[in-house]
Structures are given as C-alpha cells and as structure tokens.
Image (cartoon, rainbow, N blue to C red; front, side):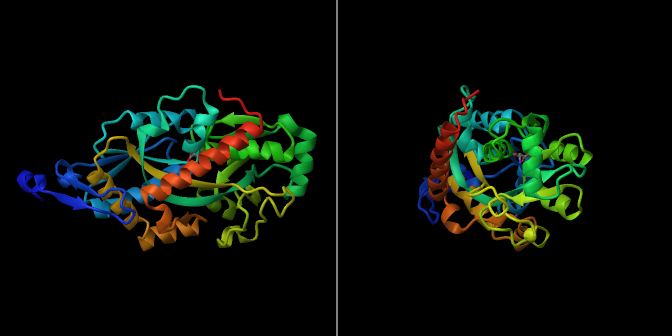
Length: 330
Ligand code: ASP
C-alpha cells in the first residue's frame, strides 16, 4: 500500500473515456475498508441478484468486500436518496435500474436530484416476461387478452412500487391491453414472485433474471417476453415476444447502472469503474447472467460518459411515454 507521502504525489488515473483523468492524492489508497452497495429493492429480486453478482466480482479487483445493503421502498427512490445523501468517498454506491431515469416524471417530490449522483457505467440489460399465477385460466397471450377484457379491474398486476421496472412495464401493458388492471405494489419483485407462485396475485411483468428459473420449473405461467427479439436462453426461447403474440410494437427492456454520490473524487470513481469493467468481463459472472437471459453491456456504455448519454436518452424517451399516457406524477 502507498504511504501518505507517496499518495500525495501525483497519481494519474485515466480510463478509456477520459472522464476520470485526474491527478489524485487523498484517494490513492481507496478502498481501505468495505464498500457498501445499496440496492433500492428487497433481497432476492433481480436488482439484488445482479448487485450481488457484481459486488462479488468487483471485490476481486478492489481487494475489499463489497457489502450489499437493501434499502427498499417507494419504487427505489428511498435507497437512491440514501446514496445521494451519503459521504462522497466511494464507500456508498448504488445499483439501480431504469426507474432512476423515470422517477422524476412519476414523483412530484423526490428526496434527491439525479444530479446528486455520478454515473459509473451501465451494468446489464434484460428483457422482462409477462408471467401469471399457475392457476390463471389462460395458457397463452390471445386467451389472456380475452380474459383481461372480460375481467379487467378484477385482475391484479403486481409491481415493485411506482417507477419500478415492473410498474413501468405494467403501464405499457395497461395501454396495450386497453384495460385497467389493479396494481399491487411490493417493496421489490422477490415477494411479489412468491405471491404469484402462491396464487395470491394474478400477473406480473418481471425481469428474466428472476423469472427464468420459475418459468423453467413451471411454477408460473409465461405469456411472453417483453423485448423486440425472443430470448436466446433455452428456457425462454420457445416463449413468443408480446409483439409476436399480438401486442404490436411492444418492446420493453430493463437496464441497471452503477452510481456514486456527486463529489466523489475522480481517482476513486476511476478505481470503481475499473473494478466494474473487470467484473463484467468475469467469465463466471457472464455465464451466470446469460443463463438467466441477461446481457452484460458492451464497452461503449461501460464508460461514465456512455452511461450518462444512454441514461439521458432513456429519461427523455420515458418522460414522453409517461406524458402521452396521461400519467400524473404522485
Ligand atoms: N424488478 C423489480 C422492479 O420491478 C425490482 C427488484 O426487486 O429488483 O423494479
């Protein structure tokens, strides 16, 4: 480890995109203690799963444990606020999904501003799947469509709170089915999945990360994948896209990104980005994610600049979808 004097000498860290080119000193010894990675949903769901995989792989480069903390509630906004207010020292990070880009359009009051966070790189992209409880009568999408038209508001659609990925997908389903199902919010999709399997709720739009094993084990009914293309994963390959099955133009994928509080020293951000890049090249991680239908993103979006550009595109695309659908912020 560098001593303090050596650390105060110029340590220049430049990563591919150049965003973190910085002469650093105080941060040269980072990390000297475990790093906390906040997941804004409960344990066992897709955000938690990807965060735990990435945390374990990042540990190998950082040389410190990366501890996952689940700070759930309000569609991920509570955990996000926790990180936005944390000390900007690289010891409190956030893994969050598409909901971070849409929350400003869905909430009148947020406990943070997106600008309170630094972009560190995109992590993954995954299709979702429309799944139902095993006892739900329809077996395929055309029948489900009829069933929804006949039963509408009596049917429950589980989600992980306003602005969660399952909620956003639910909003798209409402408009595609032209029907108002009843939304049932949870603090994450892990408990919602238990209720789908147990028959307490009817339907959910859930990321492949979490639904693939349950679909394979026939513990839930699968009506379609939400992406434009079918998933190449064997357990999902025979499931049509929602677009193919009749919901023309339906296309929804979820992505996760890594963030730090604004003001985190550039040299620290550079070290975290290097660890993230190494984690996403880890063959064991890639194999695990791909088996669940998740794509690890390419180098272009792994840079903070690439992540920011993608994020801003998603935020403006969704702000229009939300406005056009006449959804008022809560
Ligand atoms: N997948 C969830 C969502 O719908 C959140 C989670 O539990 O990871 O946003």
